[in-house]
Image (cartoon, rainbow, N blue to C red; front, side, top):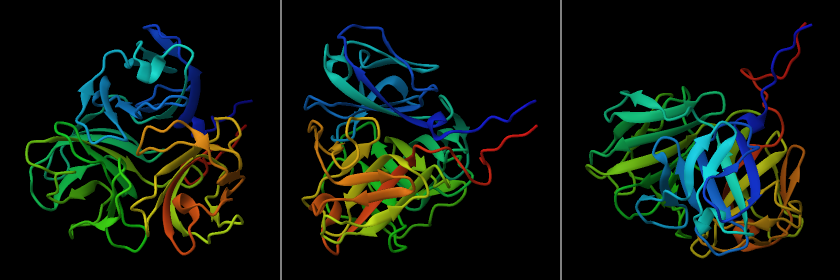
Length: 344
């Protein structure tokens, strides 16, 4: 009797909690795959959010809360491994007795050359989970195009220039059809991108802004296409009540990122996951745009088919305000290419 393999969401995204020991060559295991994008935050110290990936190399670090250029940090993630990663003794990721959370996504290792579009790139793409990492050099041209390798148009893209200091850009068009952008490292208001072509099944398009396409500057882009049963990216309207809106995702969430879209000049990004203690109703949020330690939130319930807001707080539920969100699943993948099944 033979059975097919069931794809699980944890084959492509997984959260790992660990306690630092302050020593180099520390193996963090139990992730379930070799990660290609790892985002680490100290839970009990006001340290940066550290981001490393397999395309730039494990020792190359950027931070979601900073506009700083990429730096080499040999004692953060020394290397990625088949079931996790190996740490050095840098306190931002491995201080003795301190607690950390690591968010991990699987792409396709170090990537390969992509000559789609007007700008060549290096792309590490996982078409099953709808995630790719793209490194490219800007040319300063409006409507320049870059291959993303996903085979479907990405719904949301995170951009960061690597060679100079400048803000992160988070770009999407699923709220009102226009291309909007936010800054991951700040609470700055939403603003519209210049008119450029919408993302296609093979390409994303750039304007001339320094956040994504200055001539001769190097960039990294994290691209996400929505996959039924695994990921959901959208928006909701707050009602200002402790009986807040329910957001249907079609799966039980493992990770949810939110941002006020309507009136966000003083509203933080908020991040919740299913691994840190008390994640339902008494969950402790992370704030990607600053160094805050995890804090009691009481804002969000992870339910079997979505999440519900439980607080009238402006970061997530001001009356009449619109919020964007990204959610990844705890439940198994489903859909046309990944239907859990058994076969004899």
